[in-house]
Image (tube, rainbow, N blue to C red; front, top):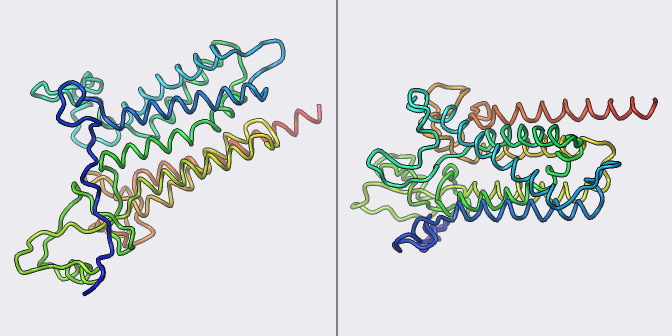
Length: 327
């Protein structure tokens, strides 16, 4: 008997923390993960304050300043993430026609849905704008404070992607790897298709005569992102925080590092079905498997822009530091 090389998505995991319980059933893992993420960012910023990286000359930084800075960034982040998700990733066009629905947390029949749908890149732009706004208003060095925030972001991002995993969303493409996972909400394929039968045979999946649709294992890409865009990138920045050769260095590393990690992982993550590829080698390229390195998703295009932007920012800040030293 062949070994079935895949893992079933745990049946006990639900998007709700207390499924089926009135009122408490509205509390979702994804929201809890956001709270954990922001709390971790606050704790890391406090540690950086203790290490003296947020004080600037005459102005003394307090924990209230950190809270105010973080709160402003979060508000702008959520606004940017939601607006970007609805206006860029949604293909129905309804949010362009009815923009008030962007922040309306109910469906057409009045059921509470929350603000489902957030875009990282929109959150990045919004959060950056919020931090700059706070720094200008409070007359603080935006470069220094955003450097500090760059160290704080990735660890919290880890929990954001764990929230996606708990929701059973943003899963990857089909895979024969032994850690491939069968997600209940993933697209199923006809058992009569030859490539499906061959794929199932590779992983030891038993297809009987009664089988009509097959749910194939996929890359748990949410966990890849949690590990590399989150934990790994945070560890790198945490180590570099005391060794940064110039102001702006940590921000440049974060932007570039995230862009590179996400760009690569996008080859394992399935693009949104209603969008598909923005650039594709062939017009009918399937999204459920990677057929070419030249098929690029929306996320990859935005991450490529991040890489270019991060490298450019790093070069500018390096030349700026050299210029200041020569004065």
